[in-house]
Image 1 (cartoon, rainbow, N blue to C red):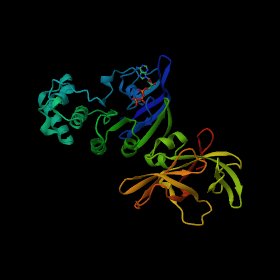
Image 2 (cartoon, rainbow, N blue to C red):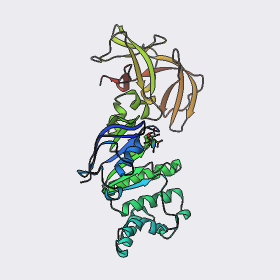
Image 3 (cartoon, rainbow, N blue to C red):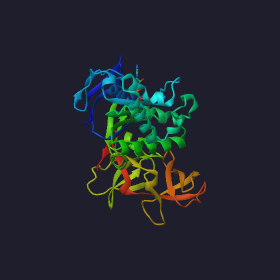
Image 4 (spheres, rainbow, N blue to C red):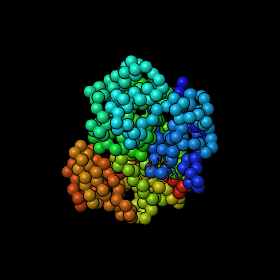
Length: 363
Ligand code: ATP
């Protein structure tokens, strides 16, 4: 069993509270991604689990055993860093086998484990090279190989792909997912990249200012963000946020753009929004469609910028009364033009409402 349990864990650096009261259980064999903006505390949290940073208060358990006072080397973990941290004077094979050599493992056993890990990562032909003779992607593979050789109970990854270009990052992401499938070891992965989080994680933990904003499966968080922060953080292109006012209409409560009074959405039964209240409407770019004639909830707009992406287009649309442009993602059809007038329709089933504190309203 290699679950990782955090109970009310906090970390202060002098007066900076880097991590505040985090409670979380990572199940055995789970791949959990910590994600959040720069400075949110994700690396500090990981480093506390690794034993590289002392825990200011709270409790850490790995495999059910208290770990606060256990040295990093004795925690049964292996960590892969953004900087690879390979020894430049050693070959790939020596780098990968180094930790076992330090433990006094015999040479045949080390060779066997190194060869096995090299096979998993398809780097057999690199074993005799020095790190300087490798590309960035190959170095990162070696760093991962070095972690595998140790057969840890828990793998920790600290932004391992940040130094790679976009193509290689996507490829390595798939390899890490496959590695998890294959090894079925508990993994904790830190990134600021929400795409990496969405694609890799069994469960995502979103951090902001040292605290957990929300945790859940990628789809749960995407489809039902608990607050405006999570809604805005996950999803590319970003969700549109529109200040609106709730008011009565013949068909029930309607939301209208606050600055122009233009109706945009009719609220369903049971949505707890009082007439006259201010509500922020969150709609993802692919949840806005282009209306045909005669829909009373269609909002007129004008295309200001078109980005043709091949299979889809991004439209940036000016709407009366809104300071910001709305982003629309349209699949297939690509003959939109700058200056074109279009009517926008918001999908009520994919609309999110947030109150003045940024908290989600309704289900
Ligand atoms: P990034 O994505 O930029 O690496 P992060 O989410 O990993 O950010 P942390 O590195 O965990 O953030 O830092 C959290 C907060 O703690 C930041 O405000 C940072 O400045 C502060 N901090 C981190 N390490 C130290 C330290 N050794 N001394 C003082 N403050 C620190």
